[in-house]
Picture 1 (cartoon, each protein chain N blue to C red):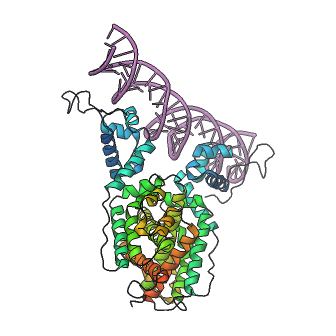
Picture 2 (picture 1 turned 60 degrees about the vertical axis):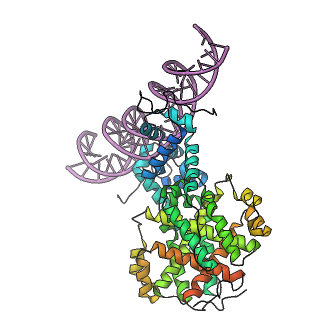
Picture 3 (picture 1 turned 135 degrees about the vertical axis):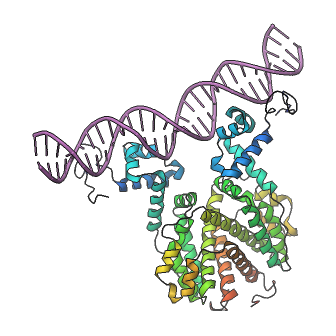
Length: 232
Length: 232
DNA sequence: GGAGAGCCTGTAACACTGTTACACCGGCGC
DNA sequence: GCGCCGGTGTAACAGTGTTACAGGCTCTCC
């Protein structure tokens, strides 16, 4: 890499409509395209057209479509704010980390698609891992147990967001939960059948799932540490 | 749809190497291709070549690539065996349902990819939903609480399989957990750092996560049903 | 000044994808 | 004979990622 990326015409050249494409400009335009229409809408020709240049310039700057997506993922992950746990008990702070992570991910739906498509799920929650380690440690878990708890929460959060995001993209399920639980009343529990026929409230389901998991993880191995297991 | 799909040359025609393509044959060949190399390897031309026919015949029989994949998903889901819960307590049986579902899914990795790509995650765990409803009911949960517990387990199982499958496809993570937890020892807990640097045992992590979640779900709202909230 | 080097851009192609317009064949009913 | 209909084949269109190659443009060195 040459250290100087000077523009041929100088800043805001008086002659041409644009000034010597930069790698950053390419990434910006690509991110904008992806943000607007999803990763599938990011074509090399379309990107070149958006930038008013030729495809080969794109390739010169970013090399590949793969590397372009890699760079976008990296950029977006770094753009995510640091998680700051809130709450009094370690369990509450873990739940707050999970909520924060989910919120940050949902603010960048394209990121989820890109990351999953490229097999970089790991990358997605490295930022939150250290916070989780801290809280799990504070809850009294040590060693392998602590590591397993951290990973359980990570998997749950990311898995949940994947499923949730996936379900949002599929409006018309063919058999569908609705008619399935409309016909046969579940276990003679009409309230249950009705609840399953209704669409789920994602935020509520998420928080309760994480809370249940964390409760199960902390009370199981570490003893009662979180200031009483039933704050209800 | 004409009721009769008779072959022009009669069964196992004496003249040609094949006998009047059937929709079933197309689906079989497509499933074989997907099973071998994943959904991305299923191209219409490749499928036609595999069958020794022309692309237009494929289109005549299945209409679309979309519908072809839809049919494959439906077919594979129906091919999955029914889950049969094992264990004495409801919690144990729920865990066994989860394990069975995960096993069935992992035996069909292509299914996971297809289903996720097509936004049909819902479809994937409808077979297990009724078993889960039964067990959750047996555990004493009723109404909306029961529905939420069922959904929580569903989301966790499918989300876990998605994350797990995704991670398997990505051998080289760039920053990576290993060097991340090699440098800074976590919270002065070398055992934790070592555990996080090692790759996780997926089966163990899965079972423990589900167990913790189920414990949390059952002890939280239904009262002490699963043999006391603290078996420790 | 001229020569060369390095950075960057443009043209045009290759191989591949899903999809379809159109012609064809082969048996059926009339 | 004729037409019809189910099924097949040829060849094309539009789109994708990618690259070989030719050039322009600026800077540096002589």
